[in-house]
Length: 160
Image (cartoon, rainbow, N blue to C red):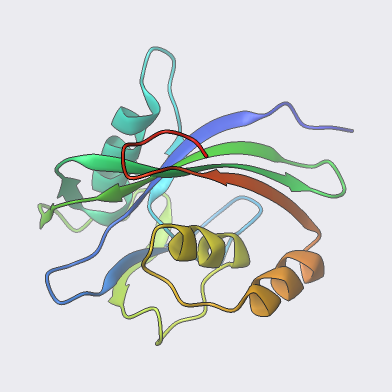
């Protein structure tokens, strides 16, 4: 069985102290992992709007301008899921609520303090926030049976 692609979007949110906002996934293929706030793009919604909406719902942060940092195709080798993920970096963020929609918790942590899901490691590196090694990322993807391809964006937002 091959899953139909789900179009999704996420936001890399950093706080004034330089920490990254993570959510612990409650359900789905990455349940239990630290992820970035994000989710499915709804009908009629832009990827950028979805990233902002999901950041409020899951993490309780309202974001300002979102800069595109990459687009990723993420698939399970066994065909159980297939995502096309649009990644954005929030230029500003304000805590507005506790968050918690479909997550088991929200944390703010330095990338040196946590071991997020390997797909998140790559997205954080590409956004200029993470410093995870390519070996750690590739080993994690292989271990979890994930195929991940991506395209970075330039500072002007164009795919490269």
